[in-house]
Length: 141
Image (cartoon, rainbow, N blue to C red):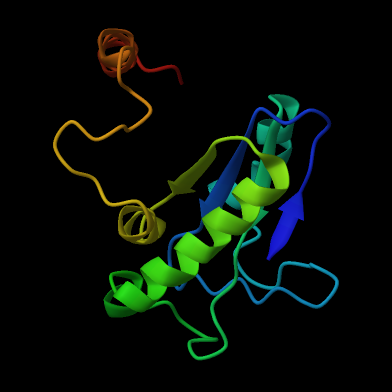
């Protein structure tokens, strides 16, 4: 796992790249695959907002590819749960899972959603939808 800390963190964002999802992190934390992914390359933007970022690599028994079946498995959910628990113990702030493309499968598996479940949008749904609608009506170039 590669973690980039900030002073006085407000939250932790665990970032899940799409595609094969196996980041091929080296022992020193260098990213071998996926460094061009939107979320992965946006780590400094999260940091500017007081958010610690964490990137987890594929487990040793799936080192090359987090195929869709594995991303939906109880085994993957357990791995993600262990990461969440570890990060909560260290930072004592909320931990958010953020994914793009196939990474969203990992996010949904690691933090299952049920009706009325807390999503981060409770109480701000009107504002979020208004912002989305404004962007859809007049997207910036």
